Image (cartoon, rainbow, N blue to C red):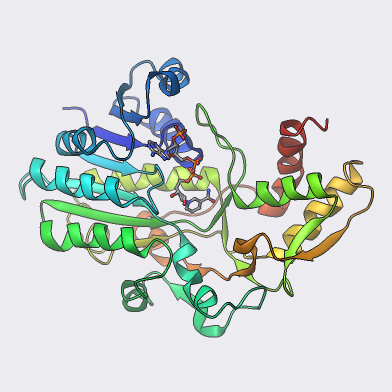
Length: 339
Ligand SMILES: NC(=O)c1ccc[n+]([C@@H]2O[C@H](COP(=O)([O-])OP(=O)(O)OC[C@H]3O[C@@H](n4cnc5c(N)ncnc54)[C@H](OP(=O)(O)O)[C@@H]3O)[C@@H](O)[C@H]2O)c1
């Protein structure tokens, strides 16, 4: 029988790329996609005529519970890091529709925003990372599992971890935390990320690239295609007898970070953007200025993706963030009608 996957966020950047890669790699999977309404679903249905679309918002608990109960694997990407009602509905549906003999798998998209909690708690913006702000997703799993309750996304992670604690072995969860994601997605609707496009947009609109504080804060990064490849491997892991019963892969310790080893300083990104925009005549000069209205640029997020490498043999293949800056400038210049 074909594997049944229930995916949320098909119109989004990450969910769209995931959909693209899943269909490329496994056209035999039976896909059910949650989209808000028929209008929103039109480009999705046009690109993926074999997929089944169901309509509803993240508050449509009835739809989400029903589909989670029926699916073999749920991939949640629609505002997944922060939306509690949809996470609760998935937990409930998986528990209702699965058993130890027929487990339900939940691949939950979070983000390494969770690791910024210390800077947020201490209003520490633009500062270089402290040594203790580096988290390895295997070596530091105890610290990751006991992050403060008010860490970003932690409220939803607790719902996922709670579903695992209450429902294992019928309910098996994997929390996936990518850092800054960059590059053009290939989904049917949104193909644009958040942080880097926001810097480029800011620069093209205001005439300078923004840096917060001293500009020394650092995040890991990963290309969108490497994120899509991770989801394909995570689905394969839910089907593979060698990994599907391993609680380190699906279970309460299954936090997966992702990074390509090429961490960026936000001030370097601003500099690359300003140089590229000025080179192309989109800025009069390559100006970088200190601001305080782009908060996510001031925090640190440093994770080591040991788990994906160890259990999935995942390795990054996409071009570097620096190499993608010219295309990021092209995308925003086109959006803003500047080329
Ligand atoms: N982009 C990054 O760099 C990054 C990195 C790490 C983690 N994350 C996290 O990953 C998740 C997805 O990010 P993304 O960049 O893919 O975002 P995105 O492009 O904005 O996509 C969000 C998706 O969620 C859907 N959605 C949002 N609210 C909804 C609602 N109330 N009802 C139904 N659907 C709803 C959107 O549907 P519509 O198209 O209809 O609005 C869209 O499909 C977020 O939680 C984000 O915090 C992002």
